[in-house]
Image (tube, rainbow, N blue to C red; front, side, top):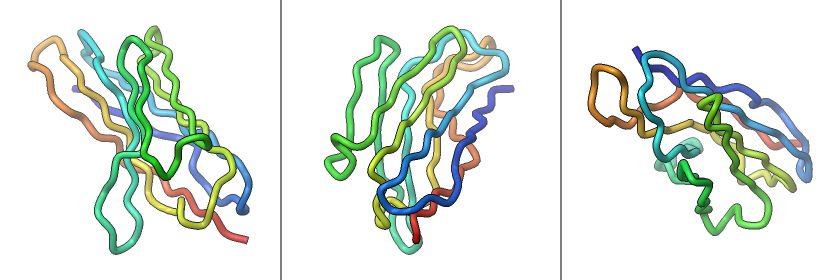
Length: 120
């Protein structure tokens, strides 16, 4: 009944930029924290950025100063602006959100993932 849909991934050259979006839809009562994780081949999934409903952000050290997370609470949407991309940013990026639906207590939901490839 609740789903997260991501968009915005793709192929970009080193130094380039991409903007990811993730929208939560369904029988939503409240969306708490939202965030982005990534998983590169052969590596564990790691937190990239998170943002509370009040707009407080947290970033992994590897992306500080290059990535910016924001959200539109009215649209239940979170964004990840990625600048100065590096080859090591190549991964599948997943959206995550803590959501209370009309029928289910607070749960963590995941998007399907979107591929980001940084290559020349």
